[in-house]
Amino acid sequence: MHLLNIRKFGFLLVLVLSSALIISSCKDDEDPETCDTTDLTYGNFAQDFLITNCSTLGTCHLEANKDDLTVGSYETYLDAKVIVDRGRIKGAINHLDGISNMPKGEPQLEECDINRLSAWVDAGAPE
Image 1 (cartoon, one colour):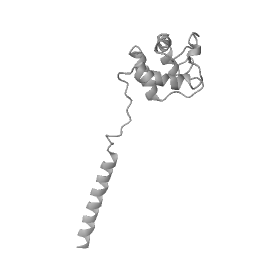
Image 2 (cartoon, rainbow, N blue to C red):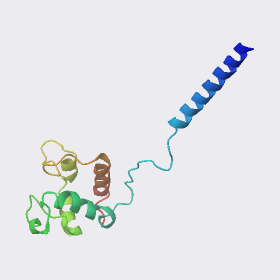
Image 3 (cartoon, rainbow, N blue to C red):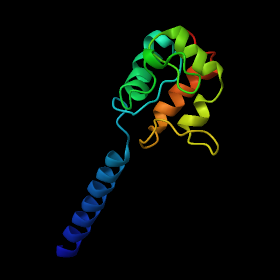
Image 4 (tube, one colour):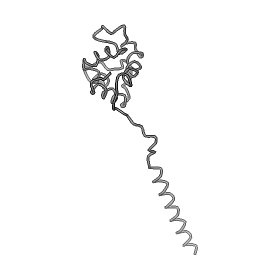
């Protein structure tokens, strides 16, 4: 009789531990980290992003520098579009060789930020 109780207890223990493992390995569908790269515009994404990451950090891409072809400004859509149309912004944020890494003097942007800015540029940098 004692051996039967040990087997029942062992089976129950394996069942409980297996259930706990299965439950803990499931992802929480309400808290996934996503990187939405759809329908990005200057107004709903790029303006705040560029000013936060490219203007305020080193005060490089401010209105005062908009006519400097090596710097430019991100403070208005038209100024930002001029920089985007030069075709180097994706290389700069991806720290490609031969292109000045951006943000200057700072670590590379987070992967999602790079993906979002790249998607905006690839879409033609819509306003």
